[in-house]
Image (tube, rainbow, N blue to C red):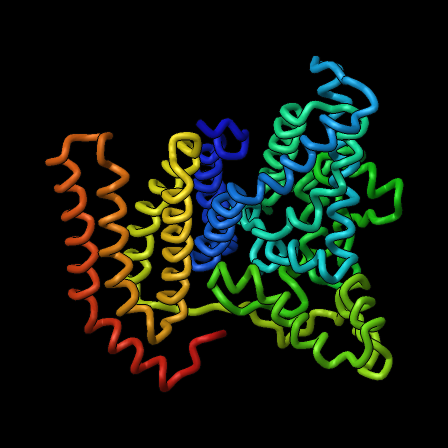
Length: 416
């Protein structure tokens, strides 16, 4: 069973998001949109699924250095836990800060900042590649001699702490603002306003930002998102969009020295002959959030499919030690394919209807194999036919509504 604190806390995430949604509705704060929230969670799903395979890089390398080169053998007790928690957050600060200040590393972190809303679902909008660029920042803890098991526990708790600070429901928190990371401090971090860019990098503690000159108090309400919006609900594209842009820009750079500088300078840097550094611009009155609209029946269809996907994802994450490598790869592909399919529906891509018909069939067969040995065969068959039947009837019954909607969309721009 997967004992990661982040995975174990998944049910609590959804309960808290539900409570936040109700409070925001009461406050008449429209910071939840179905397409954005599902994309946020989809990014988190893909991050967790791909993380199954990247653990060899992060935990594996850490364990290797711990076993071979540790200077001390730090005992596992309550006091060393608190010391490690503090030191981990110090390493996190620098990993996080460099993820903002190095263009290549920003490609692994930009995913988390690309939502134009700010709510608890944004906390789940995690990258699938960030570990590649940041795992080395924690290796000093291996040389000191902190147990890998303790590190996994502390890293999970650090990430859990950061979940609740992704909200506008909670204002400033008095004395805690002096040394802890709070919703107010982290709202600043997610702002794309020039004064808020690259500020407040702390995970649990804000003191590191105050010590190293990256602290900014929350003043006016931030405008959330990134300076070059990704304008897509596709979680795979969200993960690779910055790298695709880097590929395009680096092809315009003439020499290798400048190409390397481009990789490791701040995002926005270009050689002088291409215009030089591009500073962050103020958010003007013309700014509009990316949005798309689909008929209500399709929103309900996505929600229905999403509940099913969450069940499969939970089964996958909680039973990793019981699943063979081929099944892990197959289920990972299916989960990622399903999240991309949702984006096709939200964006009304031409390919979404045909591929959704195929995906439902593949998904139903996969459910069959997952349920074998877990529940009686007759019940498995009923679940399989019920899922596929409801899905296909829903798509067929609402096809007329969708066609009328698409005709209207062709006459009127959809993105606002």
